[in-house]
Length: 430
Image (cartoon, rainbow, N blue to C red):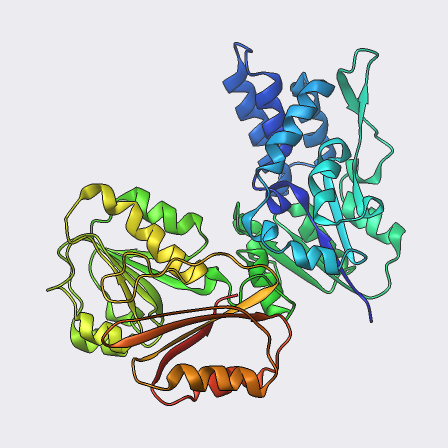
């Protein structure tokens, strides 16, 4: 049975509400612009949370725009740079499922179409409102006969389309939730990468902090092997806000605590510590999911580098005690998770890696003993796997091997790589 994906545009496919952005362009020199910006934002939220009918909200917002066709061109340029990060990195999914993906929005085709077409979404699969104009190109209103301009418009449209198959809805607002309540879709996924509305979350079938999460739970091909929102990043102590925001923006699940709390130790994947914080040997040994530690100072006497290395945990610290490095250490942690980079690590061989397309990146950390690379490559050879690139760096304790392989490979390869003697850690990066 065919599966269809109904995807919202504002605050889902893009990070922002397009009409909010349009009014900032059209009224950039208006003396009352801040007051009008707030009115439009309030009207948007009222509709998205179900406190105001969609048509009432839409009519009021359009009346406040004072926009024209030139403003729309500028808006499109802005929106193309504001595509949600997890959608942007999963272009391959959109290309592969172009026939099954529908963009259904209460927004307007004039700005939606040029933003989503580069993602291989078919023009005929874009459903949205359209503006009306005067002879000078000024926006005067919208087509009120379009079902998407009405309250419950997405429900009305879906009834008209009569799609046969499983239907999943992905969005952030009340109009998306109405699809679930109508019984027309099998599951509603509340998308929270950009905004989280409690009234919507309470009734969703699944909360998806990123499009990676949606693909992951539905066992669909994705750009990264494991959603970053599922990687727990524990931050301990007086860490600067800019460091926290950098990790949060990258999509990791953040917990910020004044002191180290042992209840997190079994689940933590990333650990960022303020200068002066310590991690005991016992806690470090229990952190079986921990992949990287960032330390905003000299970590040498605050945690065991030997234990971390033996466990395949990459440490990034600041032995020069330079406050400016507060923003660089979180980036190095992210680069390790995202690309496998160990550049300027305190305990791992230093390696910077290129991004490779149409490949899976496999990371194998092992004790630095003779013959292990030969065993790794023998596994690939036994399964006729094409290696597009391979990198190896070692130090006295460990070998750090990164292999980029063709997309298609036997899943038994992963088990065999993990079972090689003296393997410390193995993971699929993407």
